[in-house]
Image (cartoon, rainbow, N blue to C red; front, side, top):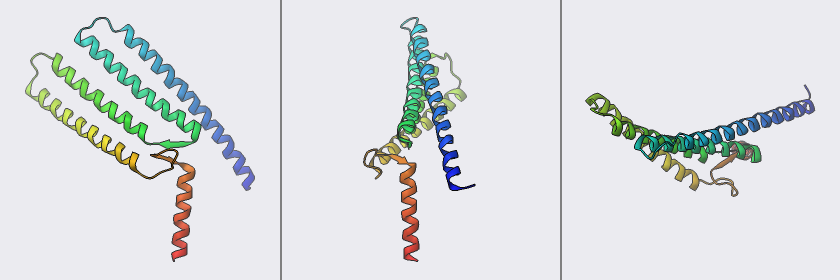
Length: 172
């Protein structure tokens, strides 16, 4: 296959990839909208259970929207940013912590084993939040493209690899 043909095929594949990403973005947006509407509809009272369920669904909508923004950023700039994934991890871990705490508050007569397992889960999720926040901070401080700290564009990675390879060849 000649080089022109490969360029043409990869161009079509990139267009197909963009179409799939657009469909994913639209699906995420619709899912977030329906979940948001559902959260408000299911908010029946200002009781503890109802409020907890509402907050849980809102946090899930927030996770979906962070993934949506990541997909949009990829479509716009063809860059993969890691910060949204860290944010999603932080929100998901906090959501899990809230779920465990609500379960412990609602349950009557919790056994020693359930309490022990819940405390371990709380500790692990708290550690995960701590690690992800540190990772987010370090990624924000890491050198990267000036227009998008914490971003790694495919083109930038390729340029850095080519520069590294040429340095190695020049030094050998």
